[in-house]
Image (cartoon, rainbow over all chains, first blue to last red; front, side):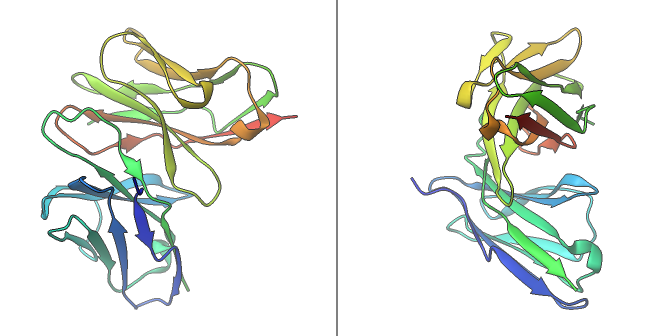
Length: 115
Length: 113
């Protein structure tokens, strides 16, 4: 069974640009969550999508957005990039059903560097 | 709001010695607790979880953790550390019906040959 796939793995952008990151969850998983990891702030929750609907949202500005497609693949977008957006962006998938007690499965991450 | 605390930044241990990584949690309601490990430039790998039942949970790679409700702790342990256990370890908590994980700051474990 293929794991969670994130693309691209590495990218470099300049301030003011925008970026789109992609995540393909494990087959059959309907929940996709996004996390930002930085040395200073650690792992912070961005948002979660389940069946194409945003089910949960963290405390990030509106520049950070996401969506989920009917095949459960998800994208997140960051507009007007700032230097502080440099981070490892991690995607996690799960079945996400009600009463779910299992773990999240993480991808390898997309490392974004903003210059 | 749920949260976890990992009080130590780095844990150094000699190869072959017992390894303990500490975690305490704060949550209203029944916690679901997790341990993940991260190797350099990689994503997070699941080690083990506590949902309910036996307080001693066994996981991957010889790791185990003990849930202690009175001390609100969920410490990760391994009887005999390997050099390959050197990595960043994260404790996390979430509530029933909510997929959102709250992570601790992480502990860098260094196993000295």
